[in-house]
Length: 336
Image (cartoon, rainbow, N blue to C red; front, top):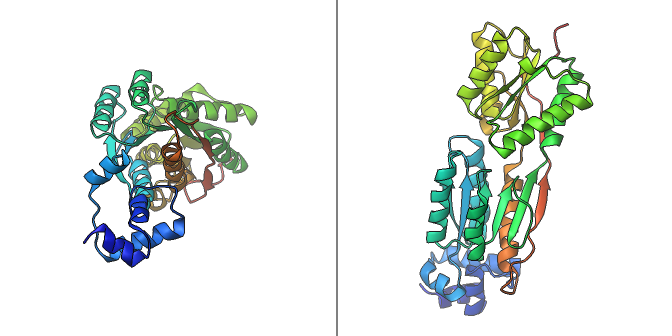
């Protein structure tokens, strides 16, 4: 099976088939879909090496994430890959485990594989690593870090809006002793969520008792340990807001082990809305980050840079993602 057969089935020229395979913006969506359907029906497998030589691109996007064990990231990976497949692209995935040295290895892999662009969904990126991509004119898009510049786009989460939703929800339920468990403060994303909580507490004149604020590690064990420290401090909260869902799940475990119940004794709110959060006991109230929207924004940022004409990098795009609040059964009225 060859490209001529695909062109005949789709009733287009071989040039149009080639442009579709190479992700060219010159092919209108309806025609591109017809070509992809013909490719699928004929079980045609384009020669990716020939494609790379013909287009000057590898057809490969890099995706760097922080923690593959956190369900948030596999869900994000799936969304990004789903969009890439629709555009005939492949994805090279790398996991940093929040380690700057491992990040360097991830970057080296991306450069060796000659990726067309990289979505960096982590906050451990060093400036000199960004320069490595820039020198090779490889577009980048960041989640929550950096500023838009030529060849560099940004996708930002409005953490403040999400934290405000959570705090207001708890205030409306009568809670005035709200604990907060942050992520590792060495991470920019954790510092942003912590600052958002402190700002929100100030706006509603909530007493941010230092005994009710602990640092976790964005994992279940960190949430469990942080909650135990809060409970042993003597300043028992009526509610706890966690920096992510895994932290909240760990906190719920510690609350149960202490002979207390959620939400009767302590309400719990998470952040991210991983799929598991709907099936905890009780189901977790949380701030939802739309993974499909985040992935689409990141992919479109790279696509915009790659489809732009000229040898000079185009100005990077910037998009802000607004979270949503999901009320389940881990929150309830404060006991008076």
